[in-house]
Image 1 (cartoon, one colour):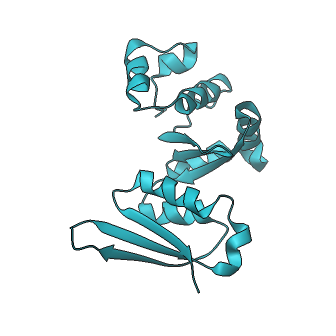
Image 2: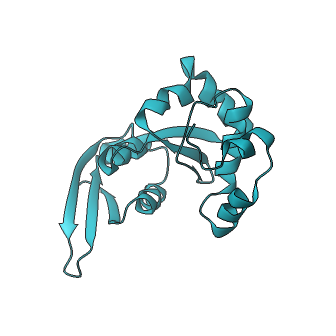
Image 3: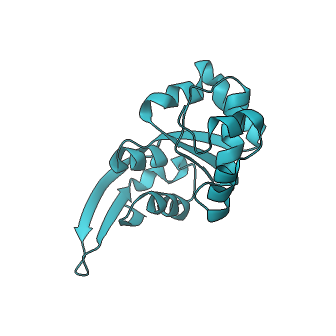
Length: 163
């Protein structure tokens, strides 16, 4: 199982000095720790995740594409249980490549274009346009999605609705 804390910490519920140090440095979050403990406790120790992000309304679990099905569970049982235990809606998003991660964050709304712009200062900007008719389909605020994607990418992210 690949989780942000060691297996012993997930099993015992008490952080070792190494995991405690990573938590204090901000390399892992309280949400990462809580999710890892729950997964181990309910017997999903073979399900790994890279990171858990608490957006306020949602907990987003970033994981490998092949683990998404295990996190959701048969008929959505696991994701409902995680949502109940964490007290928020839970979404599982794959992190194989940035483009598919962007599509997962925006789903079920449709992306009309993703453009990569090379800036004069050497940085890159990704301009993402979403179908304006899909505004109501977004599960989060557009600026919140932009902030989350920015935290996963070295590129600057700019999201808007198409005209």
